Image (cartoon, rainbow, N blue to C red; front, side, top):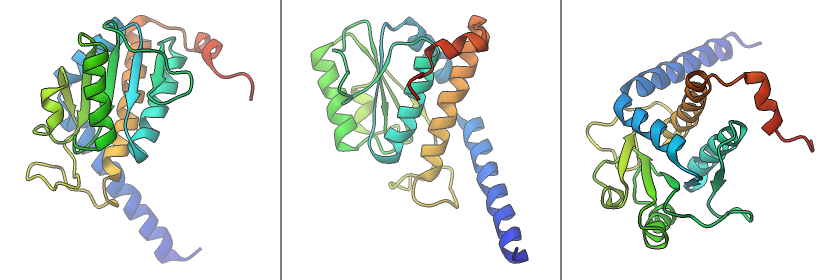
Length: 193
C-alpha cells in the first residue's frame, strides 16, 4: 500500500468525522425534541426531498418503518393520502428546491392541519412560511450563508450525511425512550430477501 494514500485516507477520515461531530452538536436539541414528539403523535410520517437528500430520507423512512411507524416516501407507488393527523418531513438544505417546496405547498392544500417540518440549512427560505417549524442543520449549502459550518467535502455532502445520521439518532432515541426490544424489531424487517 502506498504510504501517502494511507496518510491521506486517515486525514480525510479525521476531517469528515470532525465535521460530522461539530455539525451534530450544532443542531438545536429543542427543535429535535419537538420533531421527536411530532413523529410519535402522527398517524403517518411522509418524507420528501430530491437527489442525495432523498436517499438519506429513504434510509430514515425505512428505519422508522422498522420501529413500527407508518412511514412513506412521497412518490412511492404505495404512498397513501396525507391527512390532518400526519407529518410531512421536508428535507432541503436551501429550502428552495422546487419539488420539496411544491410538495409542502400541496400538503398544506390537501391537509391544511397536517404538520410540516423542514429539515434544512437556510432558515430564511420560503419554507419558513409553510412549515410548522424547522430543524436546522447549519452546514454549508449552495447559498454560502455566513453562519454555515464550512466543509472540506464535495458540494453539500455534509448535509446529506448529517441528515441520515440524525434520522438514525432519533430512531435510537425512540427505541430507548419507548423501551422497545431491539430483537423484536426484526418482525418489521424485509424477509423476501
